[in-house]
Amino acid sequence: MALRFNIAANYASQFYAAAVGILLVPVYINLMGAEAYGLVAFFLLLQSLFQLLDAGLTATMTRETARYQGGACDALTLRNLLRSLEILFWAVGGAAAIGMALASPAIASRWLNVTALTSEAVTAALVVMAFTLAIRWICGLYRGVISGLERQVWLAFFNMAVVTARFVGVVPVLLFIDARPMTFFLFQAFVSGIELTVLVTFSYSLVPLPGGTRAKGSWRALRSIVRFAGIVAFTSCAWVLVTQTDKLLLSRLLSLEDYGYFTAAVLVASGITLLGSPIAQALLPRLTRLSAEANDEGLFRTYRQATQAVVAIAGSSAVVLAAFAEEVLWVWTGDRQFASRYASVVALYAAGNALLASAAFPYYLQYAKGDLRLHLWGNAVFLVLLIPAIIAATSWYGAIGAAAVWAGTNALFFLGWTPLVHHSFAPGFHGRWLRDILATATFPLLLGVAIARLPHWSMGRVAQAVFIIVVLCGMIAVALFRAALLRPQISSMLSRWAVLSR
Image 1 (cartoon, rainbow, N blue to C red):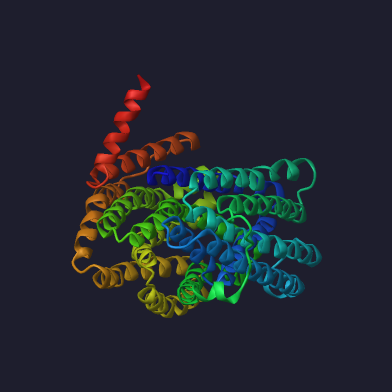
Image 2 (image 1 turned 60 degrees about the vertical axis):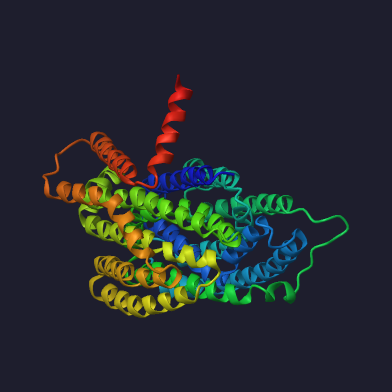
């Protein structure tokens, strides 16, 4: 399927998931209370930490499936690999769930700062969380197969259905049946079981076995991916540590209620990262296939086009969010005290996430080439700088300290590491790549500075929301049209829409 359809589908899915997740936070806080939502925030943190178990295997599965799509291996070889990974995932996921369930009493009494909820209620919720997290983690393996085969339109609609069930479907349950945290997590476990069943069935149907053959799990099937998966494992662990260390520390330092509020604020800024990830989901299989076909011209052209698209969309969104941080939080929650308290945190996280979205591109190039050695060293250096800085800043200054370190270290990584990676794979390419970024980002940055310096008018919540959305859409539109590599595709798309609308 065309790359633009996969990107569009991924954007629809990510935007829907982000919108539902963000818009319903005030509803959850209202129905369950801020402390109970803090428990939901801790669940989201643990879901991210569960990725440490992945050991790079999901990303490797996606890459091997894309190589199968490009003719590098046959269906039996791929199914043998899938069966081998299934055995590993189910064993590790089950062990992790049991281990977390056994540790739940200690987490409830010694780690989380609970005041209103009872220790028994928190422990019971943590046990249900443990098995729900294991199921959701296993689902990632089958998503890797579907994504690698570029069936991302189907996956996008399925993800939207799951998000609707998980986050919208639980609201009437909380409203009319029971608003305790245990009810919320039991519902999540039920939806996750259905999700896993559908993903397994569809994945098998996409890679049918030749007649008379049967998939077998074996070490031999895993041995061919060990080296690549090992490097991805380190970088995946580094990514989780980089993005979650601040939240883990604050879950210990803050009360569960304050932690819920902090997570709600950071959730808004995380939308910047989500705006870049749909392009990455569609880009990785396509770049891998182009690399397998030795089509470097097509690979770098696609790479530059995707960079400009991410900068136009995620960069513009980050600028607007930073400039209107307090207004966005107030429109979202109606709580001016919360908006004033966390506006600076949101602005710094938005800036850091925009830099991260751009700095991720050299990883996509290394992934497609199957050589992640530089990425391994880069993440090692990044961790050495980031983790101590976050620990110190979070311990001394709390949420604002973590936000400042996040923005600063991502700026250093973008400026210092990306040129080294580009020079290694394509000498002379980095200058063109930076010019692509500057051509796209200059207008949003200048407009953002102007907006930040102008007085912000007092409006009602609805009027303020409409104004921010209009500014955001206008900024993205101008940035996209200033992206020279995207202009032909955008003009062609608009022409087709104009013909269809007649």
